[in-house]
Each structure stands twice: as C-alpha cells, then as structure tokens.
Length: 288
Length: 169
Image 1 (cartoon, one colour):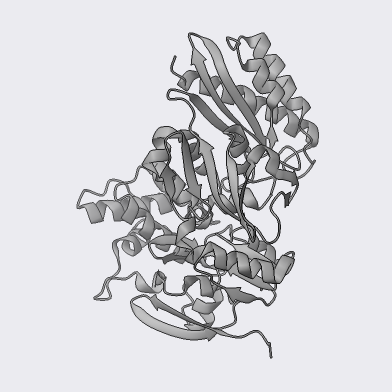
Image 2 (image 1 turned 90 degrees about the horizontal axis):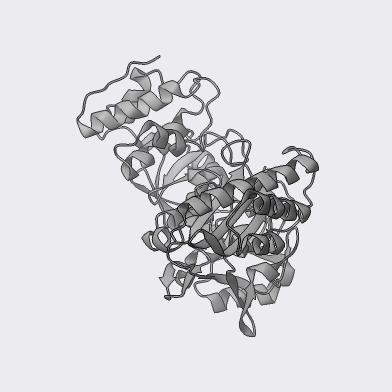
C-alpha cells in the first residue's frame, strides 16, 4: 500500500499553484486534506506525477461573513466548519452535515474544497451545496470564474473544474433567519458514505411553506437538486398528500447503483424516507 | 534508484527535533516506524478506517497512514511514546487503561490513547456519548469498547480531581 512516485510541490499562493497545474496539465493533482486522494494513490488507482499540496496557501483558509453571503476558503477543514460560531448561527445545517462525515481524525484533515471538488458522488457536501444554491470560485490561468454547485457536477469524478483550475472558495447565500433545516443521512456505520441522504432548507409563514430546497446525496452519479420536489412543497402546508407527492418526485430522479449499501430499489426508497424525515425535522425547526 | 528527488522533512516528535531526507511518497506512519523507530503507532487496516496509526499533529488527531511525511514538515508530533509523564510514570490515560482493563490484545491501544489524549484536551469533561463519538475513528475488536470508555472516564476524573465512579466490567 505504497503510492507511486511523484514530485511534491508546496506553493504559497493560488497563482503559484495554478502555474504548476498549467505546466503539468492532468499529470498534476492538487492535494487538500488528502483523505480521498491518498487512499486512491495507495491503491494505485490514482498516480499523479506531480502533487500540489495546498496547505501552504493561507488565502485558502477561513470563513468570511459578507452579510448576505458567507464565503468559505477551500482548505477550511470539516473540524473548523463544526467549530465555527458564525456557521452555527447562520448556516447550522453545515455543522449538522460535517458531523456525519467520516470520523474525528478525518474531519481534522478533510476540507470543504476537497469534498466538493473531488466529484465523488458519496461525498455529502456537494448535495448540501446544491440545496443551499452555493457557487464555487474556480481560479485558472485566465483569472477567476464562478460555477453554481447545481451546474458543477457532470458524472462520477467529472466536474466543470478544468485540470489547470483550482477551486478556491465556496460562496453560500445565507438563508433567511428562522429557516428550518435538516440533513438526514442513512449509513451502515460511522464513517460510511450514505446509503441515501437528503438535505432540506425551508422557510415557513403562518403554517405555509414559503420556500423550500431539497437535494439528495449518493443516489446517482452526481448529487441531485430535487427541483420538482422542492416546488411541490413550496406553498403547501406540508399536508401528508403533498409530502407524498414530493417524496415520489424525489424518488423519481434517483438512479442509484446496486452495491454493498443495498439494491437500487432499496436505495431509492431510502432516499424518499430521508426526504420525508428531513422535511419533518426542518419544519419543526422553522420559525414563523 | 528513483530519479525523484528526496526532500528534507523536519519535525518535532515527542519534544525532540528530527530531520531526515525522504521520498515524497513516504507515508507518515512509515516515517515514524522505519526512520524514527517509533513502532508504537501501528499499521492496522492501511485504509484510514481503524485508527491504530493515530498520532497527534499540531494538536489534531490524525491517521498517519493517510498523510505523507512531507505534509507534516514543521509539525509538532506526539505519539504513544511521548504519552508518559516526564518522570516516566504512567499518564492518567495510561493508568486508566490499565486500571479499567481498557485493552486485551493491545493492538488498538496506542491509537486509542493518543486519540483520547487529544479528545480530553479539547473536552476535559466529556459525556459518555461524547467519548464514544470522539473515538469513533478507532476500532477495537476485543473489548467491546465498554472498558475503553471507562478508562477515558477514569482519566478525565483523575485529571479533573473528581471521584472515579465506575469499576471495570
């Protein structure tokens, strides 16, 4: 279990990192927390010739409060997300989700940027970022561009990120104060990827849902923004007939693999149950 | 002989500064065990699951099988070899594991104690649930965890100067 040989780079700025990526193309891979990439390298399923360690780039760390938008540096770890007072107050669904990822040791190393950029359908943050309608800041040789999380994922491990680009930050619009939220994840054991998981953010106004956003994790090649299900719930009182219709709409867009986590039909049904539970818990938590 | 250049790595391990030249692909666990002869951190699963290789790096518990030595350049590192008190007596955690029978075969123990050391620094008075969540990245196939939890409670109580409640099962 020893990785192949590579040259190790430790740039101290985004520009320097991008220059290394440009000069080596797809022979280079950025290294953030490394807890997806290093296991793949040990199995020789990944064999980059150049490894670009991002840990020395101070600009990629930290959480900044822009009022309507919170911006999180790509190298911010899961443990730092969990410990952030700002996120606990404004975006508590992030803490709830991070606590369901892997185990304590891995959360000290694993980063938000790595989790969303890797394109692994098992990762939890991509679905959550689709639910929150976040966007990713991508730095490349021609400058920066932003891509919405809902547009970023193309297939398993295929994303809008070009080999010479670096995901530097995640920008999240802050949901209304008093919003309800829940991330429901079914897993076989601590540290497992989801059999199915669902993220829900909603706002209520006098018993009626005034806005709702639902996304699903690990029930297709990519995270899924469940736009039909979200629209069905919006404007409803969360009566059981409406919830049933939304759950059916969410199940309809899933395309899970049959694997050790269960046959495809089971995982589709579990996705529906995660949506149902997340809706109920989000509604309970919402004010108004 | 590889044509990849070896790189210098410097770190402070258990209070002692060390420097070696390593291949970039050298994993931290191999660096500790083979370069520094610190064989307390164990190689268990090699797949980031079992936690037997856990060490403390800059105040964080990390799985040293899933980190390159190069990433730990400049770090402060503590392994099980650095756990005992300065006078050589057992630390509260080590004593707790002995008193509460927190180990049987002992394979997971260095990782368990090193992880619990960091956990108690962050949360000196954890609930049972917090202990169980805190060691969720460390697997033990012997004890069923009951006595490991009690060993950590023993250490927390001793460090806080409160009474030790439970006996070992």
